[in-house]
Length: 238
Image (cartoon, rainbow, N blue to C red; front, top):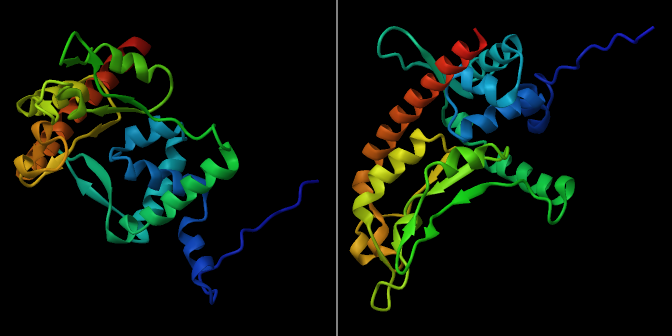
């Protein structure tokens, strides 16, 4: 006969660690927070990334919203469509999530077996040029690891500058847009308030005042790409 376990509650405990665990002391809850830090906002994307039952995911999201870690926001353009985002109480967990990842890399994976992120940053094409084959981005994702697209380093012109790095910053926006449409998980860009005054990679850095509009554009492209993928997946199952 299996023993009947009753979960102990810490809501009245005189210990901040115990009371924090009352909110976060569940592996699914922490993994939902991890995904939120990686930019996930939509219910379907949380479910797909975590391979979690929808009823369990719904309960964990409701729990995080109820305790002020996340907010449920209406992001619909044509009708209501809710998304989830970290708010100040949740954003303040970044130190803990980072520490937990570093601890896992050191003591769980072990040296030389740390979790992998694959980065695309251009391939040499003749002299003084780099190219990015957009086919490679979904191919890399098929390896099962998150793919980062290093947009600004992909626009360097190696050896073309007179003692400094040359680059093609005017193509940051189209290249980033193409990469997100191809399904990358993250985008890396070098940003500077005045690129001409940057001490490194000035010729391929994005102006700071252009960052927010570009991020908003990339988010729209990402949403459209995910909706297309979901539609195609549903049609294939049918």
